[in-house]
Length: 423
Length: 167
Image 1 (cartoon, chains in turn purple, green):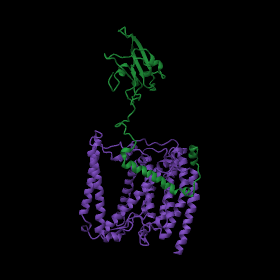
Image 2 (cartoon, one colour):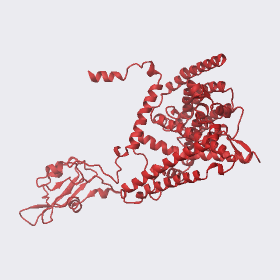
Image 3 (spheres, rainbow over the protein chains, first blue to last red):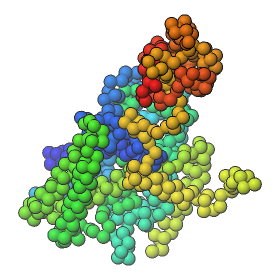
Image 4 (spheres, one colour):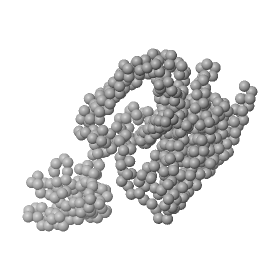
């Protein structure tokens, strides 16, 4: 009982974060790509005139996909065809079990680690699950009885096998420096400072490893410039070509879940996990009277400015459309005002009135917030890179993986080992 | 010469810094981020036209859907000389001529039909017309319908089909 309930709460929190991020990421992908290409992007779907700059479109997407025919091509393998999307989605969510999204939280004298399963072999688990993801893709591609889907699945397999090696080598350097396979220890180890001012993040102590790992994660998640498994110019759309309806939605969501998890792995291994640079837990707890008003004050300022901008826009564009859409700026302004008011309420209910542990809990919340911010930033990097770089040619992909990244990873490993032996 | 050298630059060998790709990738990401920020903060400068609400400004010489001109008494100016339908390269103007009651006018079109699906909007008809009876200055380009018949427009439609008045 004492294990089950906190675990369930942690799983619920993680699932809320991941599944909640998916529609937001789809929106960011569409709007970001539009702005990068000098377009306006989606802005038509609305609920009673409220369009939220296109954020309503994912809802329209889901509604549309729900009412589509659940098609199965002739000659496809009935069971595997149905199983593949579920497998891909399931495996995409599994990795999160070992990712620490915070240090610990102390409630009623009991410490709960903010990680679902604090495995000794966390990194090996990550690698194992990551390679399992290929099975769903291959299954989907093969069971569809379609040559394009099959080719996409083949490409995905060879790509994942090639890049998993450099991914493992990149992680190996981190593993040696923090001398642990446990992700929570690696995350905690990154809170130290080198020479008193430089945060000991993975990217600082292992810059080459960080680059190799980020590139390998891009390849593992099948995102551009490594999206050959679904290269639409050659393979129509790759392994999910024959899928329709909610099965396609599952593949689509799995892609974004993989993205969130890739971002979380990059954050945990190379960008300090839940650590806030120069603001360790002790510093926050002892200076909570300074840190908390500053943080809440900045949030209040931001919300107020946004609310003011929206109200100014509402006044300026009073009858721009002549229909429900004119209500939109007022609606957004009211939401921003409410969040500003919420910050004021939080500021009023100062932490030391809540109990002796309040400062510690506040520090934990701040760290979880920092982790989520970093993950969101790396998700944005995924999208940003996708709309910047062209796709690799297949032989370029293979030669990059085997002839550049593998030797570089090995060299990095040797240099790290020598450096660790000498120091 | 300059054009040749410009073309040649596409095939130049990469130097060491470029062959590492990383610097070039960050440069590319800088460019895309520049576009994004510019469009985020100066949304009004984006070239997109929000179409059903906004329209592009076309030149006054833009050839839109045809209209038939009227005399001051409201009858059609057309004298059914068949010049326009002869000049028409896509053969989309169909006229049946009839005898006019007024002997000074001689002929008038009993029917005057244009198949808008065949029309290529070349403007030869308005150039060919000797009495300035057909014009393409309405500026109407949103021509939509659900059946072929709706694009087969007759004389009454063309006579009342304009934005700037009938004359």
